[in-house]
Length: 508
Image 1 (cartoon, helix red, strand yellow):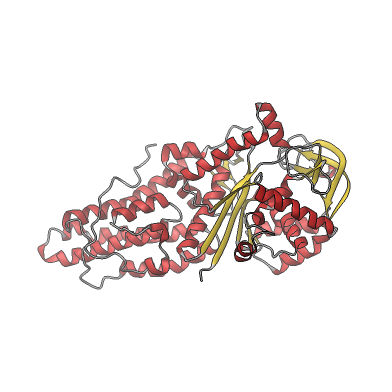
Image 2: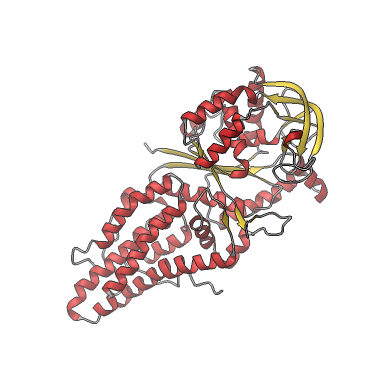
């Protein structure tokens, strides 16, 4: 029976068009999902959109459309971008779907019955863009939101509250005994310090807001959008309705989130799960931000990078590779076009692309286009791959994508050095060296076959091109490393197919 792996990104808020941050989280999740499939796991990779709240309602009115019409437009953009980026999600959930809203309503009713939710009065400040409530001491410079720096609105109204304070000690105990629950460790320390300062009960409904999940206890209230959004991780599994699917995939193995929404996922979400008696996710991993010249990207600063434009100009795999290779996952990074071009030209064009363009034409020219049989026991590249695979697996298990790619590039650079040292173009001019030439070209071709498997989670379209040029007919996406990753999988006599350059150099 296959091992299960449940992986999620946040549901992305549809008042924003897809930006580099959305792409980064989803590309990282996709690379992890693809790798786990290569390792033989049955993967459920969930992404989706968060479509309720005051911000959506206001934006829709400004545009002269209904909230659902606005949501439909933006959802289409997300889904189209995921296709362009080769995202292999197994499910896409929208928080306006009945399969989700029904679960939200049932969860609210249950928590109310067991007195984890109670009716009271909220007095404080509300940030519409962040959909966040704040107390006056938390505000910056009068009434500015401590997260986004924009003006908040003073609110005093009836509300239903979740007894978050009840779960302060259970949360601290859990964090202490589960060191991998929040990663990286620096983020966990932030969460622990925040919880230690004291948790206050959370206002979880709004009055006079039509666009949201109605409160099942009192219809004039609407459930707070963040409570609504978090529940998608279990509503997508049919919580309360599909016991089989829920029992198979829950608890989630990894929630991937940006660091700006870590507290929702590492404090509010686990507290809700504790109240429901549901096991907590294995890991909440909070990655850093991509910045421009040291500043966080934002529309107001006009320094936002459009991932669609990068894909259109340079290719999806090029963007995927840069984002996962340039910066250790979890840290902030600086994005610039010169850095992007340098990384693509150096690693993809000069290293991997060059290895393919050196190997296939030699097989075509000197072996009639068919993979030759190795004639001696030259195990340099085979041993290199065997040595690297455990390090690669270790890196992927801790979501160190840049380190994993560094491991793969050790193999690529070793293969290019092997070409230089063996000089197959010289062997081809010596009649008594044909057997040695056959061995060298087989080893290079077989290394490329294994590399196609290894880079598939990161640059799937390019991996498929390598696979196809090597004459492999099996579906690359259905392969597993325990079988296909074993040396010798490329059969002598296989017809190779010369193709265009895998990564044309980008001109500055």
